[in-house]
Length: 146
Image 1 (cartoon, rainbow, N blue to C red):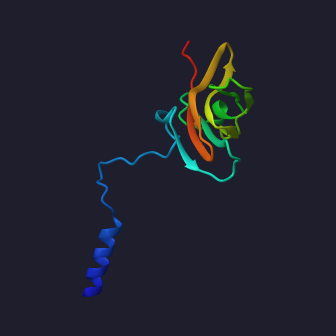
Image 2: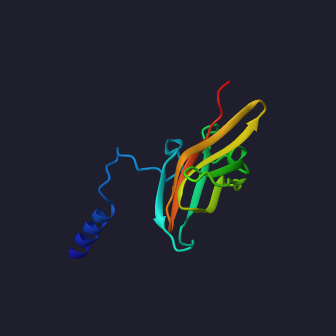
């Protein structure tokens, strides 16, 4: 009998306290509401005065925010806003990722894609890169309705 009571208590403890009608927070950068959001974590893989950027481009143009038709291999530019230095350019990965080591400071990011006469844009003007940290950021590529 004690064994059954212990199993019942263990099962009750494992179910957690989340009620059935509450929603869980979606994983970072899996919904367009995360546009412009970022978070930082310490990293030891960059030199002093530098930080790492781990940015994901998603889209509001498809049911799948990671639709490669919209986010894969898009041209982008990163530019330090305070110093106005040299732009860093490239293309997103097949998953819409941009992973770069950058100097500490505030950077702008813009990725573009032209669809006929419409230019779709994913942009943010306030990417904070801290020395010794990785900045995880999410930017949504959107196309103007015309």
